[in-house]
Image (cartoon, rainbow, N blue to C red; front, side):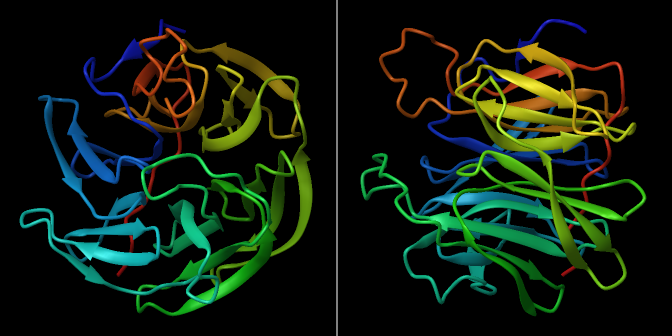
Length: 296
C-alpha cells in the first residue's frame, strides 16, 4: 500500500468529516463541521470550491434532482451550488433542541440516513462535553418523510450497507461499538442489532468505508490510524496515519481504489503536528463500494 498523501497541502479542518465520492462527476465532497464550511474537489483537474454557512454543517451530498443536500446543525437543507443559497428541507431531530447533526449517509436506494448527537460545539467553536446520550438515527425519504429508528445515541458514527443489501452498520462512539443490523433494502428497515466490533486498543470508533470484499475501514479517533475489519469483525490490518484524529474515509477515484481520509485538529492546536486536520489519501489494493446520491 502506497504512502499517505496530503490531498490539499494548505487546507486544515477543525473537524473534517463526512467524505462522499460522487462517481458520476468525479467529485469528492466533505465538510469542516466546526469551521461551518462544505468543500468539493475534482481531483482530476484540481478544481475546488467551498460554501460557508452560519452554523455547523455535518454532511454534503449530491441530489438526483440537481443541486446538493446538506445537514446543518439544526436540520437538512437544499444547497444551490452556484448561488450558495440554502432552502430548508426537513428537521428530522427537531424534537431534541440540544442536538446537532453528525453522521449522515445515503443508502443504495437513495434514502438519507441522519444521525445526531448532543451538541458539543460552543458559539465560538469551542469544545463542549457530551454529557448525555440524546442522539437519534432517522431515515429521510426522497419526499422528506422522516422515520426514526434509534434514540439514546451518544455520538452517531459509521453508516454502511453491505453490497448485497442485507446488512446495515451503525455505531455509537460513546459505547465504542459498531453494530450490524439485518436490513431490508426494499422497505429500508433495520432490525436485530448485534455488536460487530467493540472497543479496540487504538482510539475510538469514528466514520468508516466499506470495500468490495465486505471489509470495513474504520477511522480511529485519537488512535492515529485506520483499522480494517474482516466480515467476521476481526482486525485484518492497521494502517498508520500521520494525524491523531482521523474522522472518516471514503473510496474514490475512477477505480474506487483511492481512500480519502478526513481528520480533525480540534484540541490539538498546540500539538506541533502541522498535519492535524488535513485531508489525506492512500492507494488501496481493493476497490471500495460506491456512494449514492440522495433520491430527492
